Length: 84
Image (tube, rainbow, N blue to C red; front, top):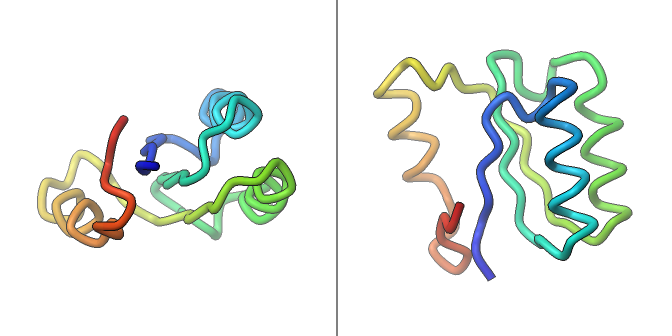
């Protein structure tokens, strides 16, 4: 069971996608945005996804920054590697 990365995951479109993924059985979600857990509604979205059965991580990451993105990817649990 791998991890699915949703960039822009705390925004309207990313949140909608994350809800769909969780409702469809995705169990490990990594949501990123520039503000991460400080983004408006991020905590509520994470709680909603957890209620759907997903393990959720919300991280701040500017994906245009190669070093930050590499660090984010390196931090993914090897037991649940990135699959999408």
